[in-house]
Every structure is written in C-alpha cells, then in structure tokens.
Image (cartoon, rainbow, N blue to C red; front, side, top):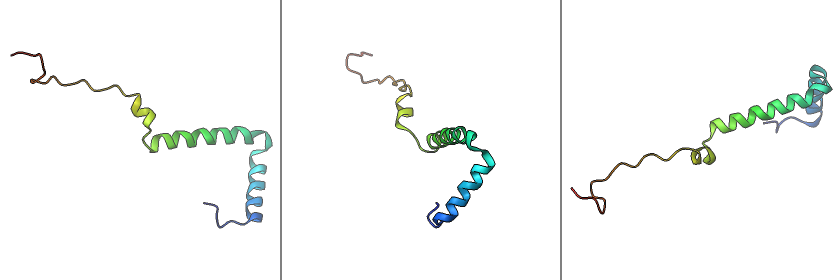
Length: 70
C-alpha cells in the first residue's frame, strides 16, 4: 500500500496528521480505526467461530430408521 513512498514523504504525512488531529486525540483515533478494521474483516470473510455459534439444523425424520415400525 505505501511501498512506493519514501521516508521523507511518510514523515511529512505523519507531521500533517499530527497537526490536524493533535497529539491527545491520536490514541483515540488509532483505537477507533483498529476497531473499524476488525469489524470490517469480520464482515468480509466468513469466520469459523461464527459458524460454530450457529444452531444445528433439525434432522428430518427418516422412514427407514432402525426400530421404527410402520
């Protein structure tokens, strides 16, 4: 994503962000950005933990079960 940006360019971008948001607000901004990314990743890819939380579907009764008589 930022592979073609050099060190001085990244420094200027970081400086501008620091000026815009101020030092006290940066930790809160980073936390909310992390939470948003976590939610986005959870919604985009199917998670095995979400599948494990699903209730099993009810089994359909079979006519040929052992012990069942007609």
